[in-house]
Length: 276
Image (tube, rainbow, N blue to C red; front, side):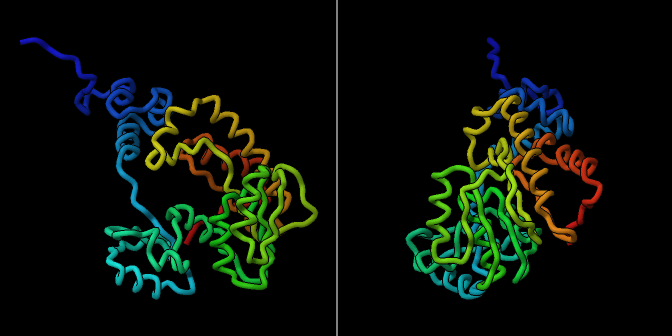
């Protein structure tokens, strides 16, 4: 019988090249996974990247029970999030974005990880808060949802078109929206600083599979340098006793743990606070 080369290999014979071929990932990314956790980890990451992502929503803090009841009446099935208190995975809704619950603002689309970042920031009423790279405004809106009226929130972005979108989204709020390069100083310090930094977005491959082919290791290095500049400035603007939250939508070591380790060495006046 003739033999046909398929490009597939048994799991126990997997190599970087075989995993890249089987799961449709660039070899540099698979190699990065292997360096971080070995071949089994690389295989698991690529398998996870190829699974369909759920539609995750954020329920309003003030109308959470009302939103759950409304979605149920509309025929939806909800699976509550594992970590973020207002997160839910929306299933089986016949027309989610045409629904009354959506039109009335009882929920908005937001990944559980994004919600968890705001939960870790833990903003409190009356505090000075800076969302450094805020566009398109999802996390700022959640901060506002948690602290309520009479707030002191500053949201900035360096791109004019993104700032326009940000202003439109927050137009009926007290949030101060700035077109500002967050690598540069402002004239105040803040109790809570959120740096959801520009990154390679390699943690979003599951939702945006094209990203894997649009990035190179050179792109990652460029973003690491930008993240460092933003972190340095965020630290300068965090008041004594305040909280600085650093987050990226990347699962690469260079943009996450390695960046954090470097920051802690350079800033011994900061300590890591474990989430509760």
